[in-house]
Length: 89
Image (cartoon, rainbow, N blue to C red; front, side, top):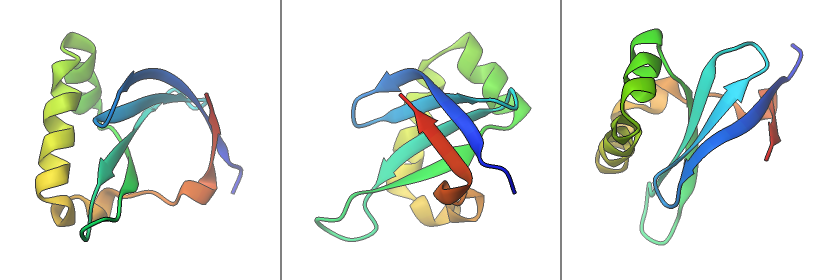
């Protein structure tokens, strides 16, 4: 599999980092803490509906970030393997 190049297009400190992939899809990195004193990032691909909501209102990603922080287990199935991506900042 060829790695997808991601270019950062928006960022909210401690909230999210939004990327646009070379394939035209949007991906978001969300911080979460599975255990105390451990911070990880979960990269997910936004659905078309989520992308549309984010385009209309940036606050949508802040709310999604809070949902993931408070219930990350519900989103783990959407987590992508970071090794399949190249991050351009």
